[in-house]
Length: 200
Image 1: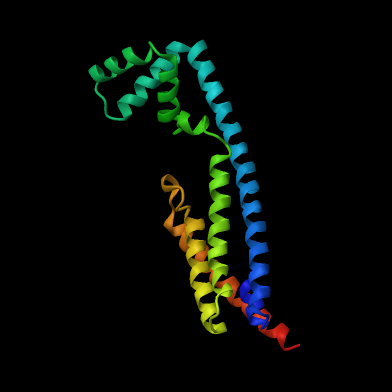
Image 2 (image 1 turned 30 degrees about the horizontal axis):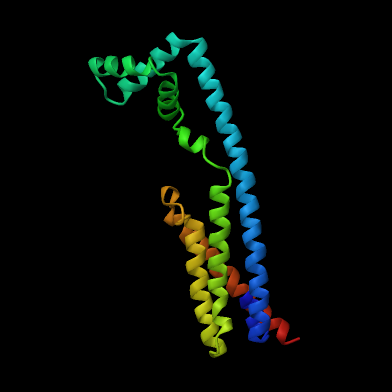
């Protein structure tokens, strides 16, 4: 958006205010979209956990056999499987935790996590990075230099957000690069739109 305003030749003050408004609006949008997505995901995971827990309580022998097969697929021999199973059958929560992890690739810690943590982190990250990208327009520097600095900071911010660098366990560099490339294309087009508008 700021690239379009820059292309239109608007003053730095106007660009900075518009950029700040965009940063706040974007951060709120990022928070609520991530929260709704995370809440839906957790509800689905809790259903899976409840079903698995019920099966362990109502069909213990079948679940025990299933766990033994999963352990053998992971490379444990019969003796090791027997030792592990002796421990698991004494603790239903541990049994549930291992069954979720091995059968469904789920972690109880993720299911029981606070649904606000990830959305809040995403919203704050967007706000800070968006403000960083707008910051050149608060400085007394030439227009071209401000534009290039803002572009560089924006691309860096898009990479961080797209790759989820603020969530190390979910870091996806390829997604970050794709996000930055799309942002670069969009920014270039918006700048051209701004230039065209200024010529009208």
